[in-house]
Amino acid sequence: MKKTAFITKEKAEEIAAKYGTPYHVYDEEGIRKNAKEVADAFGWNKGFREYFAVKATPNPFILKIFKDYGFGCDCSSMAELKLAAAAGFTGEEIMFSSNETPAEEYKYATELGAIINFDDITMIPYYLENVGELPETICCRYNPGGTFSISNHIMDNPGDSKYGMTRQQMTEAFNMLKQHGVKHFGIHAFLASNTVTDDYYPMLAEQLFTLAAELKKECDVDIVFVNLSGGVGIPYTPDQEPNHIDRIGEGVKQAYERVMIPAGLDGVKVYTEMGRYMMGPFGALVTRAIHEKHIYKEYIGVDACAANLMRPAMYGSYHHITVLGKEDQACDTKYDVVGSLCENNDKFAIDRMLPRIDKGDLIYIHDTGAHGSAMGYNYNGRLWCPEVMLHGDGSFSLIRRGQTLNDYFATLDCFKEFEMLFR
Ligand SMILES: *Cc1c(COP(=O)(O)O)cnc(C)c1O
Image 1 (tube, protein in one colour):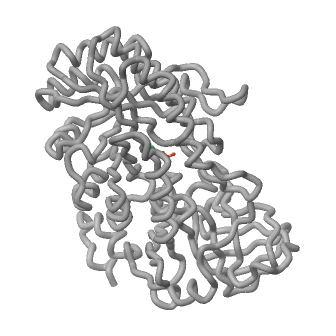
Image 2: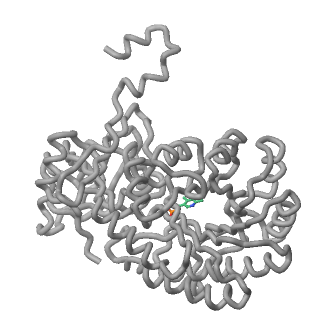
Image 3: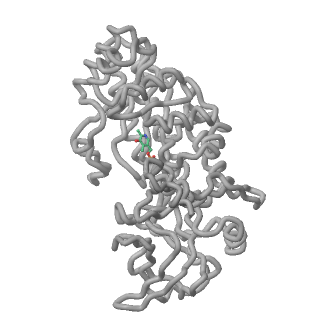
């Protein structure tokens, strides 16, 4: 599918004039339309809730948008819990799907009334010893091991992943929790990441629904929800077909009718914890071409770097690029588009065919709405850039200012000549 920018060159320049470059920009209209489609796709399930994975885009303005659709927050750290609380989420609107969790985070999550999702059976005695009595509702995370395949294609490798409990441990955990007074149970699993197929959730649902039926029988417990977690992907490359959330919802519904209803589990709620699917396509990194370099290859140097978007450097991920204002020009020049880090993997694109780029052009890097700004870091003393929300009426607002050198140096207050750094 042809990938197009959600912003014009004129609008991008207007934002740049106010906040400078680079910046991450988000498309509020797109976020809302997509959120509504997700709610509709699972509307058949009474009590359905999407818990937005806060780690994907940890910004309270964005969390508040999702609140309008009845969604919750999926957190896994103290900072994410604090963000969710600040954005007005409480109680069962917060899912705490953490792992290797410190006691104080369990304590705070419990204070908020969040649903605790245990990643491991050893977390039960750990919680009892260090936090206190268990809440009435507890979720356990399952890992079936082996590989996860769809039509003979290996999607991912649960057997190699650090998360979740074995099948046997799920039974033991439920029995142990029951003995300690837990009354309501949830089941969770995350088996494959960035799946660009409508079959992932339905196949995962079938497995988890079957497990729910087995555990209900074996342990005689009240199962109240099945959490399909995240992993629904987006088409980063133009040749990929986007997922159809309505078909995904319908596939999960069919599995529900096949497995849950005969097992007497009608009424069990379906939850999701999508991050990438909720935000990925609705964010972009806008950066300016500031240098060109002609050596053994042609390079375009931009004012963003891997500190603003780490995925290409870290995973070799493809992010589509549009040169704003040159959408209709032929892609007849091969470039590496690079940032300023002293790291040769700081490349947003390698051997990419693009229109001829002039210094001053605005480069729009697609699909940075999830796991984009969030993965920012400060290597080489490079700073986080601002985040801007573009509203449906064409106006825009700052939703996170850019980091300053003062922010960067703030933790050096143990240094005697501290004030020198601020001159
Ligand atoms: C990362 C994560 C998610 C979100 O994953 P996406 O691929 O962004 O949908 C959801 N749940 C848990 C527990 C996660 O770790």
